[in-house]
Image (cartoon, rainbow, N blue to C red):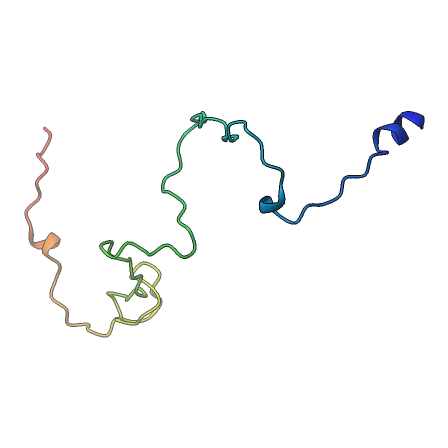
Length: 105
């Protein structure tokens, strides 16, 4: 306990800012040099909160999906449970095309 009291015996009082710190003739202390850290770099630079956004980049706007079978918004043709609205639709072009596969004999 005596070493504890001996170490913390002198009281350090706070100073009100760098303009009141004592001046010295030595060089100013600089931060350590930057070293590139190992590992994969980030995909994009993290921007500051007040930094302007890139005006040349086109934003992606995700519109809700529209079903090609019934025409309603919110689902697609694969998950459609409704009857098609246009039953007299022309046959698809893939059915009219001749087969491109060769016949194997």
